[in-house]
Length: 334
Image (cartoon, rainbow, N blue to C red; front, side):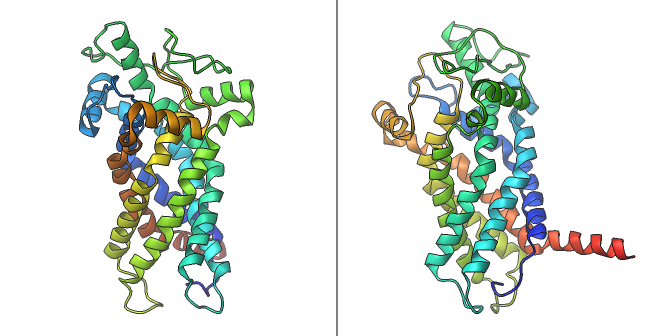
């Protein structure tokens, strides 16, 4: 594979299609992961993943599980395309004379892919987290004033804060529906482009190690299913390899994901602490919530990433993008 010329447009198409399919399938679990990671000890609204899903459906309806899905589906195409295409690009240029890449070079290619993807990942996840966590904040506010958060037929609205330098001082009493576009516009007006890249360092801290673990592990697991170096691994083998590599990498970097989620949450519930950077966030979580807090949502994250990357790798290696481009060229010449 390394010695062949790669088609970047095809890789982008493959990554985009895989991302859209994967996100649609696993988004409710991703929402659960965000809410579990953001709740503090002594202020738990959700006991576990299933309790969170059940309460979300009861209080916000079925579509409440898809809060933030629109921004994710919009940006996941360039995000996954960049990640998968960048890894192929670096692997292609690190290979010499068609020889297999060493483990170090595979890790180096993964590092490059993880670094490239944060251009899209950081603003995408920052906006997604605000929408995903809105239901938890609304429920938390009601609990503070003694109102049951799961009233029959009630629907949580997003908690809106003035997006100024003081947005982390606590919740306001104003609730209204708000979209990712409105949040992005307010951030751009108040803080400029920098506002959309809040948590960039934490995102790099998560995504670079993830890619360093994921891509070499997947590549070597996938090779086990090939009868010869030039053959493709069977459909099911590529899917399973993607699931195993994805879940392993996801759990490995979960502490970084918890820190990133906390730093990117612009809105805080009553008595929820604020953080001044990665080190301050890690220190406060360790002291106030204990080491186990860094594993919050790890099961959900594994359940999100495993099928997401399993689907991604199957679409990627089936060559859907190449087929689309060949059909388009044939249509133009016909």
